[in-house]
Length: 556
Image (cartoon, rainbow, N blue to C red; front, side, top):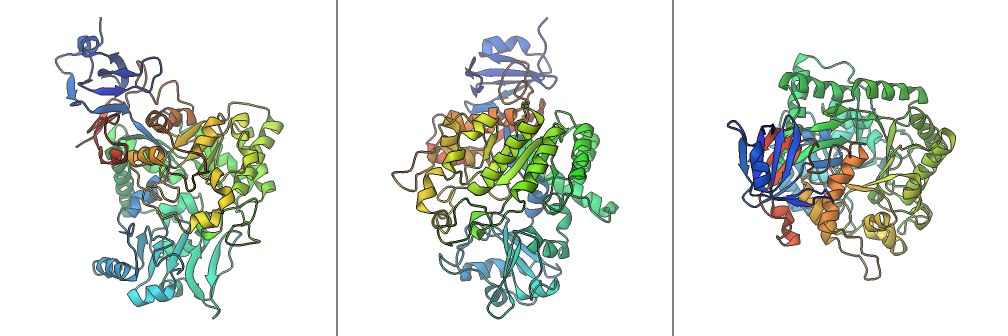
């Protein structure tokens, strides 16, 4: 007897991403699984009197997007901050800040996101003096899109007693001026975390800043507020066709919030993976907490089992670790948050416990150190299907390209990140990297052609969360020089990097990432046909329905 479907999608251009059955026009879903894929005639027998029928109106239907590197909790909280993407020049900045401040007079600290490094032009860097002319009476902090640099006005620095500087750990810095006072530029988390705490934003950043739990634990009102923020983030993901979130910061508190929402609602609108964030001040025995989270949270809806590490910073603040010095800063290779030796010990122990590891490594020196750590883990613990990851890989040394495939390391990369992509300026990044390293910068194609698994993501809120923006950016990627290799992906390669490779990265390629009979019913219906629309307008196509686990999580 044919199973009755809960949902049937008809009149669709289905891209299954299944090489054995690449296209279809209808799909049937029942009990959270895909039960039929094929022609409308082949799917029609699954229709019952209570079956919900969705007319895709000729739009593309895809597996639900896997957002393979993002920051769910902090990103959701930042939706309430002043957004400065696209703001250029002191006049435009002044107008935006003062309009926002007029509605937030009682807030202890004002936060703004997306302030470009070249907001004042290619040669002038933001300082507290600029910000003081805009707003002097209320603490103000602007964050760069990469969230690794912030700029504070004098009132903000005085609030946390940092006007005269601060002693911080490796890779973190309060920039000082010739007058022995802080310029207002704060590099990396230790430098700007005190201001986030002063402004009541620290709970949302704990998964990044400490990897620990709120202390004191939130009261009833704070818990309700945090539940609301997490719901807002989940809904924001679903509205963009996302059915899986691979979060790249984490603590037990985020898992507790998500578990509470799942229990209250009888499910989640997205599947979520939350790592344990290992920080450079932790001892190796803290990895037992990561093992405990892996044991406690291990379902297709909410899981852990992964350790996140930050090895270095970012190129634009010279905090990424390079093999050779920065082109615009001779003698400086950046300073890591770990040494190669300390990271190696973390990698060996985490791998011994059977945990997956994901490491933020942007400079080629950091990438090499992480690969060395993974190689040491394999040597000491024996080879296994570990699928350890490196996140971002904005520069890779030519000698290390083939090591990804040989060590089974996943390259987790972000198509909106290269300078010149998705509206980002070329400077100062391309000059910082240096002409000789351009061919191995943001080298998705090079790594893929060398046999690596490459998965794509946005790193939201660093870049817009929309997977279609990332897919478009991957396809239309331009070379910085005609002699550089072409790093662009085809449409199908980019789609698979979000869906198929995302499932592979979480060891679930046997049930996710494709529209295939027996697979989880995670589907997105789009407003148009991605195969016929002009490539540079892919971002105009919108999700109209998102289905996760057979339940509609978003409908426009």
